[in-house]
Structure formats: structure tokens, C-alpha cells
Image (cartoon, rainbow, N blue to C red; front, side, top):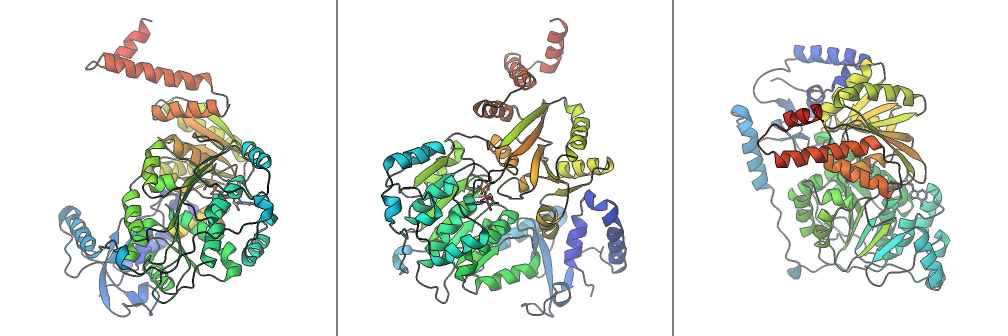
Length: 569
Ligand SMILES: Nc1ncnc2c1ncn2[C@@H]1O[C@H](COP(=O)(O)OP(=O)(O)OP(=O)(O)O)[C@@H](O)[C@H]1O
């Protein structure tokens, strides 16, 4: 029976053009040749023996032979039923999904019939120093940082770390992590969350929102009765991408070390072996869990964990989580969580479309906006815009990059699609500007590597890297393609200018870009008192006129009319 190394097959199928550049091409060729010689490229279903290819003999399937199939949602191989038939045009994949969908069904628990464990929601300690602060001092602080608050019974902010009696484990972690001051979103957010309120925290990119929920999350867990057998995690953080989940996990581990509480992270796209490790970690009674929604749902559906003890729930990048297809998953997960939970939502952007939806999940919440209740970009970022013709964009981009390369150590470039990322990487490598790409087709290990560990001067990515990712040495962000929605622009450029540092963004804009986003960009720049070039105004005006003409001359060839009009103007 033929044996296939799935990890390598996966890498080969998903190989990006960037990997064909000199350092990788030799490895690529040798791998292809060795795979051909082992009979990799055969028709029919893939078979492998787990012991060899998963590298572990401790899993359930050691020694036995099973068929596996690639799950595009989970981005990894999943077990396939015996006698499974692919059929023509992947009809089989569809059928397989149906089979698995029916197998995986979780019901909403009937909370009235379940005896819930005791919950201590308000873990705030009244500290005279904070309570006795004058109203004037508090007002001044809120005005200074432009804090807008909505809701009732709002506690005073914690202005200094020494003002509040944090548990000793937390104080030790602060020392280890070198945290001496609070950012405004932490100063006002922490007491609200510690009091047990549901909360929406909106603050600019890089303003410290992660610790904004991790610190009160840790205090919450420390105040709950200990976990017992069969209990799931007490704290749960949901985030949209694997990279973000891993990053939040890293920050949380630093914070939780002194308290010896267990913290785990769950994400897909990492192969069966890691999935098994994740299941094992779930069985070791973790106190806190950071997860992507689909992977957590998967584990809930196979019964690997439950959320009966979960009382502290966080949606990071909440607007993203309630949008773009995540919302049904979030609903299904939240149904599994007891109704008297505490729920928090955090983001740098809070578009109107998701606001109403968010309120469905929260009870008597307090909302904090740091900066402004309207959309705005981090004021530490210098925003530059370059308007050009679509055909001139490539050359202009390469020219600009050559100029910027000497000034900036690490440059992050955003392109709109995976194909576009590969195209830009190829373009730059051909021009001897060494660049590496990152998008969802890259294997997880290489995604982690290029983001955090590698010394790569130019990284080209899709929006997968736009939210929450905290890489300290990115000093410039370039939008090769302008995003179709302004919130994505704010998050993308927010990868620079973090934690009070300054940064620069450069965006290329052509008439091919989404004009609604351009209009929003003009508003954003005007609100932030940034200079708006005449060419940007002209572009927006020209498109407005064209739209107007299209409306008037419906059925006519508008472009022909436009040329005609320009000729005789
Ligand atoms: N109190 C603090 N003192 C010093 N540094 C801090 C403090 N809080 C956060 N930071 C640092 O600020 C940086 C940005 O924090 P974080 O990633 O939490 O930002 P964010 O608001 O979540 O950004 P985004 O909206 O992009 O997700 C991190 O490197 C973090 O270590």
C-alpha cells in the first residue's frame, strides 16, 4: 500500500511562487523528485499509515490505515468515511460536508434544568484612594484622553498601578513584563470589567486592549471556585485569526505564569498531530482558553470540551467577529455559555452595522470609547496617499519601495487577494527587492515564521495580518491595494505606530479602487486634520460625476460619452 506524507503534500500543493526563489527552489525540486519516485501523484483516494506520517504512535489510529480528506474550512485533513466516492467535479466533497454537518450538532443546554456552579462576577476591591478621588481630577483625566462613557454605575479610573490592590500574582507579572503605567483604555476599562459589567471597549490600534481584558480575566478566574472534573475553561477569548490567537496566548502566558493557572490556545490549520495535542490540553482542565471560533466549535461538537463553567467571555476584534461570516459561529458558541456570564467586546473600529447586533449578546453594558466615538486612525501614524493611474501603480510602487527600504528596517505591504500577494512578491523579487508573502494558503508554520521570527525586510500580506498583530519593529505600512472598507484601512495602518511609537503609512490609490472607501478615507483624513491632496479630491469628484452620468444616460455607453464630452469641453 502506498504511503503519503500529508504534511509535505500539503506544502507542495500550497507552494507559493515566493518559495521558488533561490534559497527554496533546490529544496522544492528535490522534494518533488523524491515524491514522484515514491508514487505520490496517483489517482483515487489518499491513504497513509498514521504512525509514519503523524510522527506519533500515541494517537488513536496508530498502525491502522484510514482515508483522509482536506477540509477547506478547517484548512487541514479530516477523516473521511470508508467507501467515500469523490464523484465528478468534487460532488463528493459536498456530500462529505453533509455527512459531517449532521454528525456535528450541538444543542442549546436547558439552563433552567442545570445546577450551575457559584459565580463571583464582581471582583473589584474598593480602594479608598480610588473612591476618594475628586470628581474634578477624574473629569480632567477623562477629558485629557478623550474618554467617552455610556452606561450606569461607572467606576472611577485607576490612574496608577499602585492605586489598586491587584492580587500578588498579577503584581509579580506586571514586574516581570515591565509594566509600570496603564494606558487610558486599561485605566478606565479595568475597574469596569472587574466590577462584573458587560463591556464594549473601543480604542485605537496599539493602545493596549489585549491586557485590557487579560488582566481582569485573570483576576476573575482567581476569584472563582476551583475547576472540577469534566469542567471546561472559565475564561474564553475568541479572535478571528490563528496568528492573533497565538499572539494573545503569548501575552496571556506571560501574565498567567505567576498564578500557575493553565491557559491553552486552539486554532486550525495545523495538522492532525497538533489537533490531538489541543484535545489533550483541553482534558487537562485549562482555566483560560484562547480560540478561533471554528476550531472551538469543532471541539464542542466532538465533545472534547464544554462551556458549562465559562463565565468570562471576550470577543477580540469584535466588529470582525460579528461580521464576515463569523456571526453564526459566535451565536452557536454563545448558546453553549450560561446566561449569567460576563461578556466583553474590544476593537479599534465599531461600525454601525455591527453595533445593534452586538447589543443582542450583552446585558446592561458599559461602553468606553477612547479618542472619539467616530471612526478615526491612530494619531501617531503619518498617513501618506499617492494617487496614480492604474497602469502606473506597479512602477511607482517599486520606485517608492526602493526609496523607503533604506529608511525602514521592516516594511509591511498589504495586497487585497492571495493572487495579488503572490504577484507582488514575484514582482519585488524580480526587481531584487527581497520580499516574502503571507496569506491563508501558506502552511501555518511559515505564516508564524515570517510574521514573528524571520528577519524579513519586506512582508507582503493579505488582511490576515491586518488585525491585532503586534510586531514592534514595523515602521511603515504600505497599501499596494486600497482596502474596500475604511475599517480595514484603519486596522492595516495600525500595524505601525503602536504603544505610543510613531509610524508611517503609504497608500496607492487608483480609479480602480472602491470609491465609497475613498470617500470615507477623505472624511477620515479631514477629521484627523491630515492634508488631503487635490488629486484625491479630483479622483473622488470624477467618479461622482461619472456615476451621475451613468444614472442620467442609463443604457448609453458612459465611457464613450465621457470621452466625447472631454473632447468637446
Ligand atoms: N500598560 C502598558 N505598559 C506598557 N506597554 C503596554 C501596556 N499595555 C500594552 N502595552 C504594549 O502595547 C503594545 C500594543 O498592545 P496591544 O497589542 O494590546 O494593542 P491593541 O490595542 O490590542 O491593538 P490592535 O487594535 O491593533 O489589536 C504591545 O506591545 C503591548 O505589550
